Length: 243
Length: 306
Image (cartoon, rainbow over all chains, first blue to last red; front, side):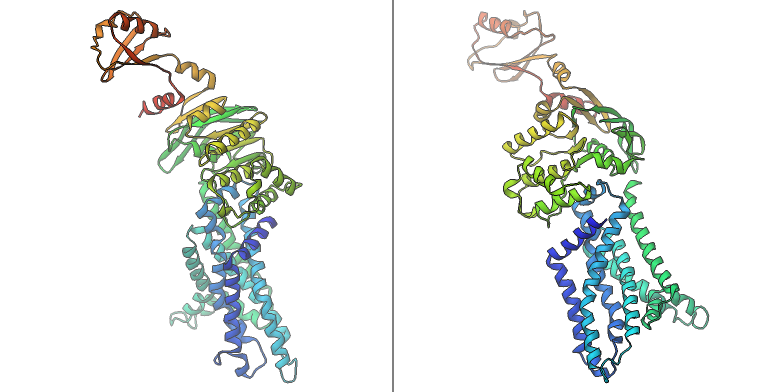
């Protein structure tokens, strides 16, 4: 499992794609948070990082499927899946190995954003006047969200041998799981009746709660269930060859 | 150390890819797996290497069942898939190291070194896999299949894309390994089977048409005798001149002045033919005995029941 995680990580950075994806993520984040006036922290006049955590799900909807699209699609395309599946390692461990690699890559992408935290910390008036606990919670929430998107992206990648298709399906599924339930709950039919319940099915509801700095076990269980669900689905898809 | 396959059947949708296949191989066997395209060679190999399961029947590798002991089998089995898939963005050493680690070998670096030496990759060892030629890629594929010193080696067309020198080298490697292990490989090259294998299994449409010792197979092929004779252009050939030869079964005109004579038993009729030609004043400019090769046997067996 660790062998696969290590290999996936190194092949991510041995190709230019790895640097491009993480570079563009950081570039977009930097532009949005410190340069474009509409979304800039500097022009909002509040010492917080809400902008980062508000934008992150949208950007991750594209960044994470871009990372995961090759995980299985490439193996299926080149036939190396046959090589991997005949090694003494179970299908589940292959999936988990790739999942771990993805998680590591996302943490690597997120680490530089800590600089934003220190910037805002220094710029606060008085210095250090920001809700560090809230930001900590938001980071935890963002990690859980990334892990969910990862499992979705890996699932999408296992469906097809075409990386572009894997990317599009992955991005669409991420969008669906995150926002679909929030938006549909606003239909007049649901408002005031079950809209609250519908929202709870979406990732957004739980992510927003965590962003407030509250780490509730219910939310953690929700995130873990989503991850387990998509990893199980991926396993199911890989086992399909055995029918 | 053995392979036992019995009643193996594989059905893809409505198509029967394998139909009640039964054969076995033991230590020291190099088993050549032959058959036209789509006969079920690759399917059998995929089942043995635990990539896909069979629909019915059993397949055992070293006494372990592919359905229940799949992970254990994979530790003692080396497999080279048909199209030789490789991670093109990895370096040869890096790739072999990765495979060694997947097998959790105690000293991966030493094994990688040994494999590079065994397969003659020394000069290319620091290159990216995408940069090397097809023959070298094939060697990398062989190296990864043998890196964990498997007891059973299954190779799907291991020698495709190799030049004649490489072919000879790789054949030697396989022959060397085959002495202490079980080797099964598929190929389209008949000479290869004659040069390498001690056993041959020919399958067609998912069924075994022949499963035999290579020596016995050669005996079968010598059952019939055919002689082709080309006469001088000026000769006037009268078929009755040759009819007096008792062992002659058939005389067929192949081309102008070229005839093929078949005898029905193991008698060599070349001397009789020569004498008959001389006595009727015909001049022979070429005489050739046609022995049946593996190729003929293959064609006979796989095309007759179509």
